[in-house]
Amino acid sequence: MELDAATIRQAQRFDRAAQDAFLRRYAGVLHALVRRSAPELDPDDATQALLEKLLEVLPRFVTPGPASLTTWVFTVAHRFLIDERRKKHLAVAPLDAGLEVADDAPALDVKLLDGQLSKALEQAVTELPEAQRRVFVLTQLHGQPLEAAADTEGVPVGTVKSRLFRARATLALRLKPLLAETGRTAARAP
Image (cartoon, rainbow, N blue to C red; front, side, top):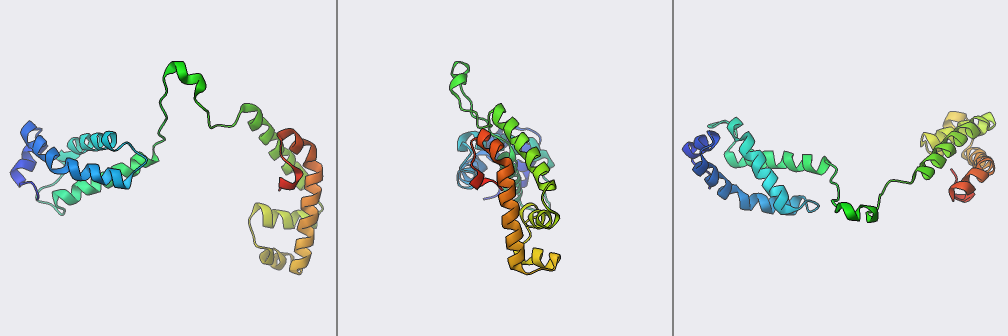
């Protein structure tokens, strides 16, 4: 059931009784919407924030207008939930337990070794024989299928496979010391 136009106008003018009627009308359905549409969010907190947002933007609703109040409310709710999902939600922990909270980011030494590995890979790729380098770059760095690389190179697919195998073997040998340092194996090398 829609709210009447007089109640909507009073709620837009921040009349407390009219706003209460608005909240009573939409709180339950919005709580259900949040719970079903965004299970990663706390439904009570998200519904509270959504209702605050609706009261904040309610003066912008045009009555009579192109949309009913319910359609407008669900449009605002939908956009609100999209925005909430885009936000990075941080886990909250007590300060004294901060040392026990896991950090998902890689350790600094791993980041440095990964950076070194990337630079070493770039250098090693430039040192490959030209035919192997072209095939490696086309297939491994630009994601082209073997058939497309064969067409580009003007050679059979078997030749592309052979060049790619040799390029990978060469890179694995050149990067083996750095791969061992990062705890990776040459078999997992590009």
